[in-house]
Amino acid sequence: MSVLNSMPYHHAVSRVSRWCSWYTREVDDQVAGGRRDELASDLYEHAVWADEVGTTPRAAARAILSRALRGAPADLSWRRAQRRRLALAEPAAYRARRLEGVAASLVLLVASAQLAWGVFVLSRIAISTVAGDIRPGSATAITVALFTVISGAGVVLLARPRTRFWGSLGMAISSFGLVHFGLYQLYSLSATVGALTYSMPAWDLASTGVIAGLTLFFAAAAIWWWPARRSIPSGDSVGRITLGKQES
Amino acid sequence: MTRRRPGSLFPLELEILENGLALQASAGHFYGFALAKELSSRDGAALTAHGTLYKALSRMTEAGILEAVWEDPALAASDGRPRRRLYTVTAEGALALARAQAIPDPRPAGIRRGALGGALA
Image (cartoon, each protein chain N blue to C red):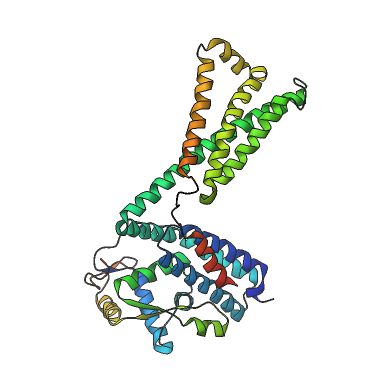
């Protein structure tokens, strides 16, 4: 079998292409497209050459991955230089992209923490159910599970620019359920939560504050990513298509 | 990371100019992978990493010591392969190489200086 048609080669090309799509994102479209096309040509020529010299598909794939790995620091350095150039050419657009990136990271971080809380409560419920401390399938447990699933979906939706509005909305909806019912469930399962409920004078106020804070935070994020609002094109999808065409 | 001094060429850039001129003499131009093969065959080392090679080519093109044009897509399509980016060493690049080769370099693995004036500053 020729290298060009082998699975190891295609796997290597797929990995290198993904890496290239990653480091060329948010770079000037033309420059990024040029780099992707040039790399696609290189990968093809490498396979043809490997066939000519009688290299096995596995060895050719290893060589391609090795070249990509050794060149990664230079790729990152090239990316930084291109981004700096873009920032100098279009400072307003660059600032907007930076702000968008910071907002997305912050919301994703808080959403992940909320999801982690849901998973923690569910794990405590599972342990207590196995130990026979609580009966399985209680209404509270099902509610927590439902809101954890919504939170999980929210985190996934938040990861993609086009679906961030729906992700924020999902997180805003689930924040009340996860915190309220989560604490309610832990009250009977966790000695710490039980003790805090009695010893901390402002416990109710604190839990209400957390719920209100999270709901407002995610509602604000949903407004920020309201569908009517134009998102900044990253050029990533275009890049994938370009490289995909070259590979086919 | 090694910082470039104004008006200097990295060893890789010197090798690209040397090997690029050799390829250019036979084919009229050269492209990325052909250059990687040539560099590897000269010193027996592994093929130059993608990032290292294309970053250097991009930098040298911007500095004006290489010229780059995309191959005619119809030609590439007729051969059933992706189009290549074709490079040629410019007159300024050939001059920079000649200057760099004329300057004795006391540091074998160091950066050769004074070759480009301000071209790569």
